[in-house]
Each structure stands twice: as structure tokens, then as C-alpha cells.
Amino acid sequence: MTESAGAGRDAESVSKFVESFAAQLVEAGMQRMAARVFAALLASDKGVLTSAELGDQLQISPAAVSGAVRYLAQTHMVSREREPGSRRERYRVHGDQWYEALTNREAVLKRWEAALREGVNSLGGDTPAGRRLAETLAFFEFIEVEVASMMERWREHREKTFGQG
Amino acid sequence: MTESAGAGRDAESVSKFVESFAAQLVEAGMQRMAARVFAALLASDKGVLTSAELGDQLQISPAAVSGAVRYLAQTHMVSREREPGSRRERYRVHGDQWYEALTNREAVLKRWEAALREGVNSLGGDTPAGRRLAETLAFFEFIEVEVASMMERWREHREKTFGQG
DNA sequence: CCTTAACTTCACAAATTTCTGAAAGAAGCG
DNA sequence: CGCTTCTTTCAGAAATTTGTGAAGTTAAGG
Image (tube, rainbow over all chains, first blue to last red; front, side, top):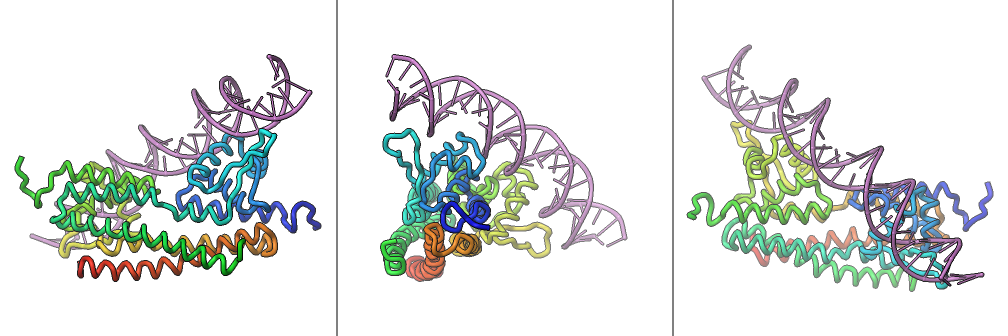
């Protein structure tokens, strides 16, 4: 079978990847539609798709696309672009941006830390439970710093391995 | 009001911490009951509670405790113990074990990597999309190694700061 | 301005998940 | 062995989440 659109992509392999990768994301806690939209973008040739293309490829309503994209944009996993001189919007994965977002759980960590800090205070730092919470808190604070430097190393590693990308 | 049990803990502060920390865990994707049980254990004096104590403190049925504990045990966040010579079971947070479990997403990473590898294969490593997936795959492989060494450093840091715990 | 092509919001139906009471299943203890 | 105490399983009620169609909103293009 000859392939016409794109370079050696048939819709079926793409869809197979999209669904299986999305399934993993869902299992890790992402909303289903967001996961599917995201996977579709990842697997697209340019890393850019319009709302219509997404709805078409994934067989979902414009409303579903809208909801998914809102979530993905909020979490910085995709960015929205406006094709100049058109009301058509395009959504893009930035290749090197999205997994930064993925590990960028800083806001989450901060909230955990806040909850733990309150726990230490109200239970008392000199009680066994208080000490347990304090240690947990220390762990998250440690992680927060480490993750930052880990991403630093990744960028370096990436540059060496993939060039400017 | 004088406090009798434990050292300066009143049920209300404990409950307040439990619920607010559990809420964070839920937001991060954990089942509600599992999160509440886990938080209760974290905030308990000895890090150990029986099924009855949990049900009582959290106002949930034995069935709910059972389900929550099964999940937590599977993910290695708590361990089950049998009080010798009793059918009563006790559940424990290990203090230094649970956050290892938390970051020990190795199985998850492996599955993501598998899905990506398949994507690279079927889309072709020489296509733009294939390259994007390959880079993502490289990222996860990088992370996997880094997280391991990060935990190594944490153990060291922890020992220095908290002693044997 | 009016039309039209998009995207978004909203109310609701459907599917899924969650928690419970009740019954069944283990295991100590007499 | 049978009784008693605790845990687990299971079916179903209740609550929550999810995706859709339809109406609403915005902005381009005549």
C-alpha cells in the first residue's frame, strides 16, 4: 500500500500509538481527552494541529477538544497559537517544553509542603508524629531543589545528544 | 480541656491535618479513602493503627478501610502487620519507605518508555514525529537514572540531618 | 454592519467510580 | 471442633465525572 499524506505515516499506526500512549497518561492520572489530544499532538508531523484536525482524528466533539486544550494549556503542556488572519486556532507541543511542565510539579510540591508544615505546627515538632511529618517535609524540600538541577543536567545532555533539536 | 491520650494531640488538629493533606494527595491522583487512611497513619503517634482505629477515626466502614489498605499495600506505601496471637491487623507507615515508593515510579516509566519505543518504530525514526518521540523517550530514560541517584543522595542527606531516624 | 466561521460555555444524559451493608471467609481460643 | 472476632468480598445505591448537543460569544471578511 502506497502512502500519500506525510512521510510514511498511515493513520492506523498513528492512532495505535496515540491510544496506547494516552492510556498510559490516563493511568497516571491525566483526564482521558487531554491525554488523547496530547498524544495526538506528539505524534503529529509538525507538532501542531488545529481544533478541527484534532476533533476529526480523535472522533470527538469541538466541546471535548476545547476542554482538553484548556487543561493542557493551563498546565503548560501545549501552547495555543492564532494563525494570523484567521479564527482558526492551532495547538502546539513544544518538544522540549512539555516534559519540563511534566516534572514541574513545583506548585504541587509547595502545597504539600504547606500542608505538612501546618501539621508539624499543630502536632508539635517534639512529638513522634510531628517528627515524622517534619522529615517528610524535609524530603519534599530536598526533592524540589534536586529536580531543578536534574532538569539542568537534562538540558545539557539533550543538547549534546540532539543538538539544538 | 486537658489531653489524656498521647502527648498534646487533640483529635481536632489531627483531623484537620489529615483532611488537608489527604486532599492534596487526592488532587495528585490518589483515591480518596487511600489518601485519608495514609494521612491518618502519617499523623498517628507510632505510625501504626488498627483497622478499627482507622474506621473509627475516619468514620468509614471496615470495607472502605480494607479497600484503601489493599491499595496502599500494593503500592508499598504502608505495610501490614499481624499482632501475634490476634486476628487484628495493624498497618504501618515506614517513615523512610513510603516516599521511596512515591518516587519509585519505575514501573510507570517503563510502560511509558515501551509505548514511546513502539511509536518511534511505527512512525519511523527519520520522521519529525519519530524524532520527537525518540527525544521524549530519551528524556524518560534519563530521568529513570537520575531519580535513582537522587534517592541515594537523599538517604545520605537524611542520615546526616536526622540520624538513624 | 451583517454574515459566517470558529471557539467556548452550559445543562444534561450516560458511564464510571466510590462507599456501604450484608454475607462469607479466616484464624485464634476454649 | 465450634464459637467468636476480625477481615474481605460482593451487589447495589449514591455521588461524581465525562462527553455531547445546543446556544452563546468573538472576530474576520465582505
